[in-house]
Length: 200
Ligand code: GAR
Image: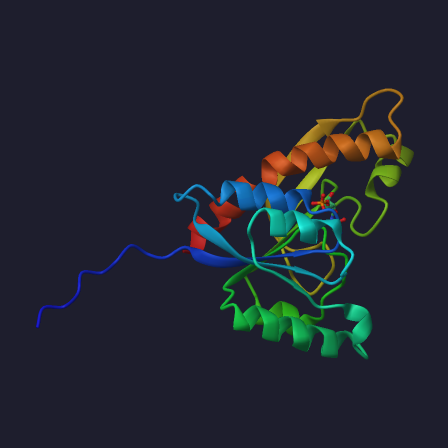
C-alpha cells in the first residue's frame, strides 16, 4: 500500500491566558482567522470568573475555561489545575495577554520556549506594575510595549518585539496607557506569528 502523502503542517494549538478585558486576546483570535496564521486559538483561560474577556472569547466562538486561583490552596495547586486544562486541550504554546498571576519556575519550565507575554513598557524598563506612572515620573519621552519569552524571572525573558509610542505633553497614566494599549493590539498578533514561524 502506498504511503499517504504528508499533509500540510498543522497550526500550533495556542492557549491565551487572560485576567481582564481581553482586547489583546481578541486581536490574536481575529488574526488567527486567517488560515495562513501559524496558530489556532485552542482555548482562552481566565483565572477570574468575572473577567470581561471571557464573554468576549465566547462571542468570538473560542472555547473558554476558568481556573479560579482563589479556589486553590497555593500556586502549585492552581498551576496543576491550569496545566491539566491546557493538556486536555492539547495546547502546544501559550500567550499571556493581561494574565496577572506570577507563574512558578516549574510551570514556566513546562512551556520553556513556548510561552510569550506582552508587557506595557519598553523592557527592561519597568517590569512589574504601574508601568505608565513610572514612565511619566521618570520624565520619559517614549513609552511602549514588549513581547518577550516567559522565563522564571518576572518580565525578564528574551525580547521578541517592541512597539514605541510618544509620551505627549499633559499625558496622565490613563492617557498614556490607552496609547500603549492601542499599539499593543497592532503588535502582539504579528509578533506571535513571527515567533511561532521561528520554531515551527
Ligand atoms: C495589557 O496592556 C498588557 O500589556 C497588560 O495588561 C493589559 C491587558 O489588556 N499586561 C500586564 O500588565 C502583564 N504584567 P487586555 O486585557 O485588554 O488585553
